[in-house]
Structure formats: C-alpha cells, structure tokens
Image (cartoon, rainbow, N blue to C red; front, side, top):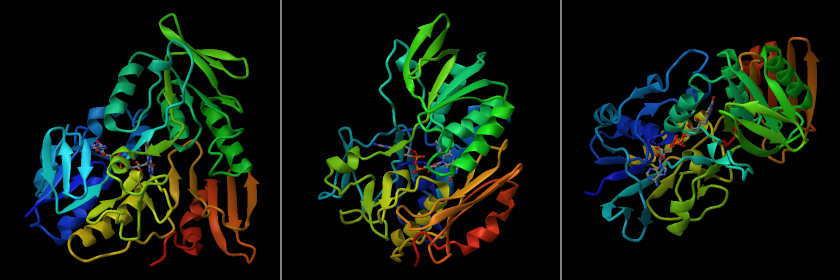
Length: 382
Ligand SMILES: Cc1cc2nc3c(=O)[nH]c(=O)nc-3n(C[C@H](O)[C@H](O)[C@H](O)COP(=O)(O)OP(=O)(O)OC[C@H]3O[C@@H](n4cnc5c(N)ncnc54)[C@H](O)[C@@H]3O)c2cc1C
C-alpha cells in the first residue's frame, strides 16, 4: 500500500499528521521537508530575543523524535521537485515516491522588495527557524536594526528587539503600523507605545536603497532621509508557495485552491496552511491551521470532513501595547465605531443592522476579547 505523503514539517504538516494519528495509527505515512524537520512554534520567532532564547532552544522536537511520535518516516533536507498527479507520485530529484494521498503543507515565502544599493543582498527575511538562526547570527554583537514593514511581523520584531536592547527603526509606506488591521486611532496608539519604548518610526515613506557604510549599512529613504544600521530585516508580507502546484497543473489563485475538504483540483491531493486558499480565504495564522489540520486528519483517516472556522482573533505579540484583532470579512458592509482613551482603543466593526462583524482592540480593551469574540459570526460556518 502506498503511503500518505505530507510535504512540509511546519505547523500545517505536523499537525495534520498528529490529527491523522489520533484516528489511524496504521496507514504508512511519509513526511518530507526541504528544511531541518524540527518541530517548533513559528510565532516564537518574533518574541524570542527579549526573553534570551537562542534559536536552537526554539526547536521542541527533532525530526527523529517526530518520526517516533507519529509512527512516520520523516525525511528532512529533502526537496520535492515535481508532482505527477496522474501517476500519484512525487519526484525528489531522480527519485519517485508514490502516494495514496498527498498533502501540500508548503508554507509561504517572504515577499522580497527589489531594493537598490550595494548592500541590498544583505537584507534578511525571517520565515523559518533557519532564517531566524541567520538573523540572530547577523545580530551578534550588533545593536541597530532597520525593519522594513510595519505589519504584524514587523511590529512584533520591533517590540521584541527593542525590549531586548536593540535600537530599532521601522519603515512603512502606510501612515500607521498595522494599517490593514487597525483603525487610525488604534494604529496611533500602537505607534505611540512602541515609540515610548524606543522604536523610531519612518512612516509614509519607503526604502530607496541600502548601501554598505563602514562595517554596517546605510538605509536611504524615499523622503530623502537616511540612517545607519547594522542589520536590515524585511517583513513586508508573505506569498504562498505555488510553484510545485502550478507546475503540476493544480488550480491556483492567490494560494493553492482547495474546497471545504481541503481538496485541490486533483484527486487525492490536499493542501492547507500558508500555501492554501480555502474557499477564497488566505489565512496565514495558527488557528486556521489547527482547524484545517483537524478536518484533514479525519478526511485522511477515511471520514470526509469539511473544515469549519470559528471567529479566530489574532493576538499581536506587542507587549508594549497589547493588541488583538479580528478583521471583518473582506468587503463586509458596515462601519467602525471607535472609543479611545489614554490606556485603550476599542474599535468595533458593525453591520448596518448593528451586528458585530470584527474588532481591533488595544491596551486594556483587550480584556474584552473573549466576550466580543462570542458575538462574532464564524469565518466559515458548518
Ligand atoms: C515571525 C512570525 C511570527 C508569527 N506569529 C504568529 C502569531 O503570533 N499568531 C499566528 O496565528 N500566526 C503567526 N504567524 C504565522 C504562522 O506562524 C504561520 O501561519 C504558520 O506557522 C505556517 O505554517 P505552515 O506549516 O503552513 O508553513 P511553514 O511553517 O512555512 O512550513 C512549510 C514547510 O514546507 C516545506 N517545503 C516547502 N516547499 C517544499 C518542497 N518543495 N519540498 C519539500 N518541502 C517543502 C518547508 O521546508 C517547511 O517544512 C507568524 C509567522 C511568522 C513568520
């Protein structure tokens, strides 16, 4: 019997395997990953510095330990080069590995801006443990970090690195941090609280170039300003990994297109996590992955199960300004109601008939998260 093959040892790949094994200990399972195959919590990458955690301390299990726990063959450092859906097989260079069912848990790539300057190739991104080790090595003995992008990951790194003693600059074309998730009032509160701990903001402008400057670098901004830095980290967003799926002829849009059962356009091929677009939704967060893994584990075990998503607020790890967001669905009709005081900002997005469709909470307003989440509609109802 051909094994179930999972490509990817991130939260999506390993959690699908865990959910499958709760229901089925026997079907042969092979998990293949281009990276080191360590089990780790990716969200910790943007909160480990201030707590003094070294990159190697973030790995919770080795691939060998995962293989034992999951009764699986785990093959780290193994890149799948092609998928042949007609032959029910994946290619690993010259090798062919046949599957009964295939799960694509390929993740996403950090988007890289084309940046001018002779140090542009030194701009780092962090989207896995390997990247993070390189980033921490680059930071060794250094102090100043420029972060391109004031989204979720950029703001979290800004808070963590500043709390850990770095001098941090953040650059974003938007006039506020978290511009897609917070109202201007909430963005202003987050900006102010991070400025209070030492973050220097360069908002409403972009990076014109990064050049070598002595032992460090100099970042030139489109507004004509410039500053010296030791390290530049780009965090401007993620793009689902689509190459394998595209080359195999699977339907792709912004992500690999899957239905409620996480089935791609090819029989016996499924996708979830940061690479997948589930019923039109790209949700690169942990909670959607956990829900999808549960449903897919059951489907792989022979009980076809559609994924459901409850409301899934995201906690932004900026302790200087506690922030929780649950954005309304794209295109939802309604408007924001905002109440701001010195210690909080509470923004509620309500439909014309008064139903709560989303929220963005900062400061002490985050205490209302659980009560408000109960009022929200599910993201994908059963
Ligand atoms: C710094 C940071 C902080 C975050 N914080 C939060 C947070 O606080 N809350 C939250 O909800 N979300 C957070 N996220 C998002 C969340 O961590 C991700 O949504 C999630 O970890 C993605 O898991 P994944 O398994 O889909 O992808 P990944 O973890 O990227 O795994 C992809 C896997 O596919 C493998 N792979 C890819 N291509 C191939 C190939 N051709 N052959 C073999 N293997 C291949 C890779 O090697 C890897 O093992 C954060 C993300 C980052 C980067």
